[in-house]
Length: 435
Ligand SMILES: Cc1ncc(COP(=O)(O)O)c(C=O)c1O
Image (cartoon, rainbow, N blue to C red; front, top):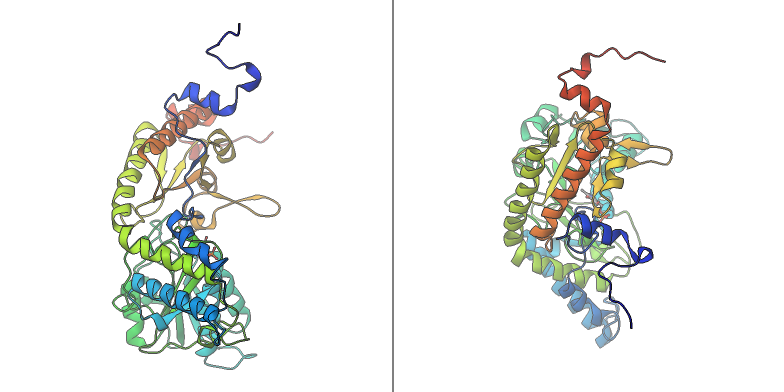
């Protein structure tokens, strides 16, 4: 007769079992808290895409048969859905491989189109960006600098918000382009894009916004918001990876030099056979976002508030990075004093989130975004970006709170610096002896 034991044999006692013992109500692990990095594809999006891999596999450029026409019809429908989400005309949407390509096309394409002096000379024109843009904007800006353009990188204040006033103070006679993200991908802060747009419209300066973290989460009306060029990406809005787009205003017309020559697709802005399945998925994701983003946003804001309130009340020396109000509803970035960042990440590995450290080839660098907002190296290393999504549940948030609080306390028990801090010693005034 076999004995049914309540406990599993030691060899089958897994990490997940251990967690369940400590947190009996643990949800399925690991929990995904990194929706700002990428989102799962919505099953409705996958369903819409599937026929375009097999039965309806035509090339929209094939003008002579049904396969081509069907594919073209699907792309047209997707284009309309994208346009509807952002208040654009469908002719203003260019499909690309994602926001990186869109940003490159917008920046380099506009800079070359509106340059004040020809290639090879200096003084080709002035461009404004900020120090906390995504690399997909910073690096094209740096390339343009080498090619003879002048770039001013605005340094935001500690709250991370770039205002119209800040832009106004650096505008010049020869400013041709302003490129600022709508919402920051690390701290979720929101820039004054409509006001910046209005400022530039009056002066005939082209405005590009990297809308990757904003579009599909928050309302956009490109005409009302005074935007000339806007990048967005499928995989941040429950669509597929490897597809995105660029909004290019037609009235008044914004022109771009294309970065890729060939078959002349996308009105010559972006040659190459269209990624029909991806585009259909992006279109569906936009349609769903339009219908659901407001409800999702309200729900996630409540969860994010709970997360922040619990962390900051249960733990001392814990700070939210970025402006307290002007922030995306689903994202928070929190620094924990007296904790070593790597140890914290190891301790909470059931929670899939991002840290304030970026891995470069040789070392762990503190995030340039946090540093750009005046956060010190130590606190930048010990910060977490937690970004919630459509399917994040309250149970998962509760679990994350319990995990983080427990582990931060545990790590602090090992920290002599934390002991000194608790004894009231001002660590900034301590003279450390070298051995
Ligand atoms: C603000 C921002 N811009 C651009 C990108 C790049 O987007 P993609 O992965 O579609 O190239 C990202 C993605 O992390 C982002 O967050």
